[in-house]
Length: 284
Image (cartoon, rainbow, N blue to C red; front, side, top):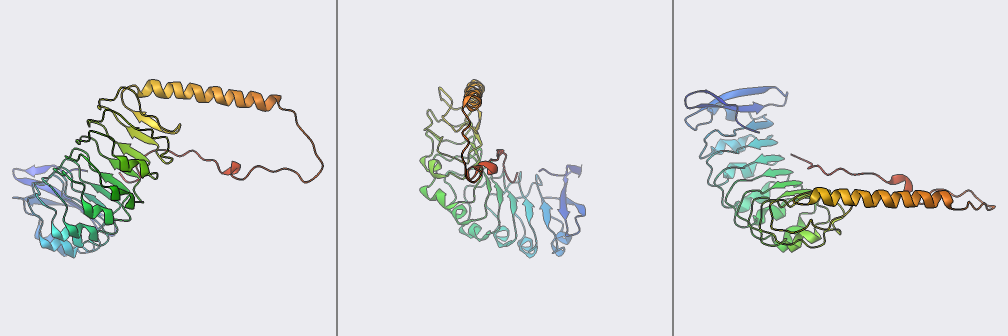
C-alpha cells in the first residue's frame, strides 16, 4: 500500500480500479483529487496514499461500489464523513494521519473486514468499532492506547489484532476472553508480566517483543512466539513434544492386541478430523 510516486513537482499519482479489473492512474496536484474520478461510480478500489490530502470531497460518497479505499499517509485530522457512507467498503487504510478519534457514523461500515489505522493519535479505543460485526483484522499499532474496553468481546469476528507501539502497562484482561483471536501483537509496550494465555485456544501467533518481561508468556503448544527468549522457549517445547510422541509410539508398539468377537472397532469420533492450523493474519 502506498502512493504511486510523483510525476513532477507537486504532482502525485492516485490509482483506481473498476469492475473490469483494469487499473488507471491519475495525477493529484495541489492536494486536489481530479474531479473526473468522482464520475466513475463503478470503481471498486481507490488508492490515495501519501497524496498530501487534508480533506476528501463529499463526492467520494457517490462511489457506492467501492470495496477498498486507501487514505494512509495523508494529513487528515478527522475521518471524512463521505467514507462512512460507503456501504460495501471492506478494506480501509487510514494509517499515518492525524486522527484522534473515529466519528459515531463509522459504525455504518457494516461490511468492513480490514481496518488499518496505525500511526495516529488514538488515546481511547474507538467505540464505533464495537458495532462492526464483519471486522476480521484491526491494525491499531503506534497509537496512544493504554486500555481496551470490556465490550471488546462483542467483536466476535476479530481474528487479528495489532496493538504494538502503544502505552499498555499491563496485559489487557479482556483479551483473555477473546478465544477466537489468532494473531495478537503487543510488541513495544510497557507490559511487565503476562497471564497464562494457554486458554486462548485459537491463538497461533503472539508478539510480545520489546516489553519489560523476564520470561516468555505461557501459551498453547500451537502458538508461535516472537520476543525475548521465545526461540529457546519454542525449542524446549518442541523437544518436550517430540519426547511425548516417542513415548506414545513406544507404548503403542508394546501394547498387547486384544481380539474379540463382534463388530469391528472403528476410529474414535474426531480422529479423522485432526488438522493443523496456521497463524497468519486473514486480511492484510
